[in-house]
Amino acid sequence: GWPAYLLWGASGGPVRGTTNHFLPHMGEQGQHSLFPGGWKRKVWWSDVGVVATLAALTVWGTQVGAAKVLAAYGLPYLGCNFWLVLYTWMQHTDVDVPHYDKAEWNWTKGAFLTIDRPYGGLLDFLHHRIGSTHVLHHVNHSIPHYNAVKATNALKEAFPHLYLYDPTPVWQATWRVLTKCLAVTRTDHGAYVFTDQRPEPKMA
Image (cartoon, rainbow, N blue to C red; front, side, top):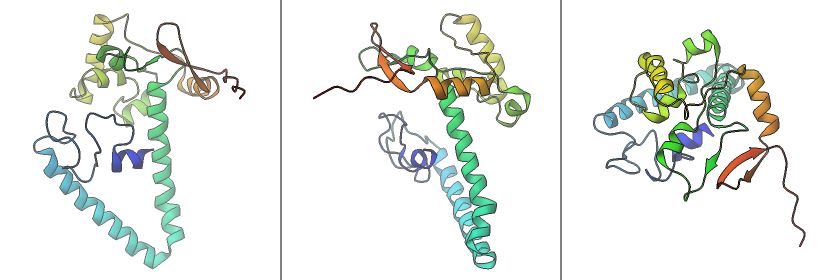
């Protein structure tokens, strides 16, 4: 999941090639560079922080034991990883959100086929509204979070037939996605949608 994306760009799409969030010169370096311009230097400084943190955890582990470090640091890390995956899953998956193959896909479909949801005031505050203004992120990822609500409202007004918002409370929506998005079927219009009907196995 998340570590594979950071280390190899897993599920990040083919345009950048194999990327690495710790080695900024990996992958495409032109127009589609993951870290253009001065961002490469910032990644190297971030790497220094990562190495320092790992060194501190190692020293801590030698003093109190690996089990305590895993309990105090490893379990919260896994919780954070779970939350990131859950957020991403709910941003891009539901029973009525289609996916397209190469012949049917275009940029507009790809950008707008993601879902804004009501995560509530606390989670919106903690995560800079990443779940309730996520469609905007697909349309223009350079807009900062403090302008996301204003820009999302503009999207709603300009593209009411494309913008997706699901008012279902997020935990109810999560249960629906968990229980109803079990398999994928192709529609007559060339789209792939989730279904809770597993296909019958073909007999040899």
